[in-house]
Image (cartoon, rainbow, N blue to C red; front, side, top):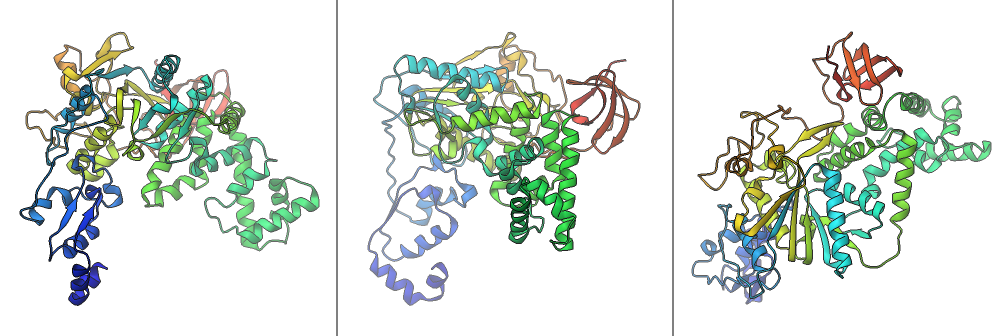
Length: 559
């Protein structure tokens, strides 16, 4: 339509005469084409009224451009601007905290929110040791609210990324707390998680036909519907499981040579993985399967917006498996979780992303994961710089203002990645909240001294991103100033690797481990490296015998 308007002025004139008045809602979410189309349509009469909030422009990944609303007065000189600043949802404390945060953005129209509601509680900021404690503390807080008579339908947990829901889902199932996932699937129902579980079930339970059928051609291997029908037919004829029937077909002439070779190669991989399952931890097994099956490579080559999220979900699945000693134990846990997903209706806690929460409101809102790199998202800032940082801040503003009565922000001092603990520091957004409107606590002895930065002065992944306030130091991650002013020790205690994708399972080989080195593994104990292939080590353990493990799961033993 835009091209028609540009190329055929008579058509444009017809529509300009047809529509005397133009009304647009959510103008901050319009994209470039919509913006240009509206400008042309309103060019003659200039009777256009738009409604929007520039501080809630959070959909650039869908094509929305906050600049459209910011330059409205320039596009339509003489336009009247009416600021609707009275808020009917949140308490003054919540509004003041959110307003103080969003003031750090330079690209905004500006407004002063106010409300006639009573002051209410300050925004609560809680520092915890790690993600499991974060989920436990949130669960305990919700149980207290429920005991006080608060409806669970009025409680929400808003996360920055989908993978963050897993910890809460597992915890709530453990304590019997009903919940719903809004705007997406529950963690174990997501396609990539179901694929990974199908691989693992086929390894542990070769007779699971549904699992094998799900992944025999995932990723694509050229084994189509005809191959599947041949496998099913042979399985029925021989009364064998699908995988066993496939092994027969791989040695027969019933399939084309290419299909036989591909199917035989896949079945050989499963033999290898079953042997590996006896030698490595479940999480190591999953990482190996994702790499060797080509599944990770498939997602890495996928340039869609959802691909990175799928890789994050698989990373979270591997992290969840670190808590289990055997593959069978983990699969039994998943079965219990998925059975619980069919629980009856009733009041439930809402778990959703911040993006999905826009336009909604809840009496009690919990905001977990407010750490540098998680929120604001490091990937978003790496891709978009200052513009993305400001959008992340708008997202934080939206998240806080979903709360009507009480808002609680959590940040963890440690996150477990690839089997190793990584230190975190609080999000810069916490530091930007006005101190007079927040109430902080930590469950850790030593307080904020435990939130030390885990990168050196020149390795801060956010250091290249300038902020809106000229007096705010960016040599180190924001959140640093609050620790300094409190007299805490902020000297770096560990240098973290930078530029490493949190979604990569095929890590680069370590250079500090060589054949003959003495190492320690959390499960198998001490041993000596006898062979090395990429990031895979063959180790002769003193008590567990010879095992093949990923180098990220061992550390050099002290002499």
